[in-house]
Image (cartoon, rainbow, N blue to C red):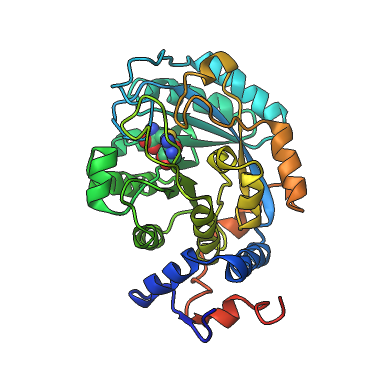
Length: 356
Ligand code: SAH
């Protein structure tokens, strides 16, 4: 184990070496990393697990991401697009479970824009926040969403490597980053993140992802393992590493103490209790799937056999992590203090390393 290792995490290039070191952590160092992540989460007041209810509203898509079965080239998929009333009815179910974030996700489908803008005010009347994940749009479309009442938007950059991005997502990274800027400009909170385990993606590239996320200063950040998906160009590519993804989650918690960081369903797909391990690595969000069953099977982002998170699974996982569901106070998670990890040594980052 390294000692006296300086971690000036926001001053590259040393930051990259430190992040890389932590991404490679296994055994004792990995346990210290997770422990520190939990401590940072606690100190930041972020140790309540935020529940989101997701509705997958359309599986039409303009893009051709190599990992995703919603891509238009997949002719085996039955396509659907929910209407406004259906979305509002499902949002009602979410709110009646006491869940305070309605999360609308879809393929990149311009035809959802009007439907969503009509649905948002009615959803807001249920006393919940609206989070969107609908892909790359124009500034004016993001402004319409914000004006309708959407508070936040997730647009993952997926990989910070421009060549890999072009190869896998089949469009320029710069366009996606421009959209992320527009989301902020429109006044919404921004969520972003990466996929781990894309073809030829190195651990160094994952470190670059984290550095890019730092530069973007998002409010939420996520790492998901790649899941091979039937009827896609990457269907035979191996899934991403669970350990590397958990380490990325923990490093993100150290770097973004106040962020919402999900324990994504893909973790559970890789290993039973994968989401529990995500919470133990510093995550603090779980997303419960409310898409009606007949449509859910056609929303094939994580393969047909994806793990569908239900409310009882989330409650059970949260309890086993020793946490409780809740809503971090906005004045806690909206503030963005200077990165408290800046300039700290590994000993400061891992106060228990001598005693564990
Ligand atoms: N159309 C939207 C939503 C995409 S789905 C958009 O472009 O942003 C939401 C996220 O699921 C993606 O950003 C991607 O990170 C993740 N995802 C989709 N398929 C995946 C797969 N097979 N493996 C891992 N992550 C995947």
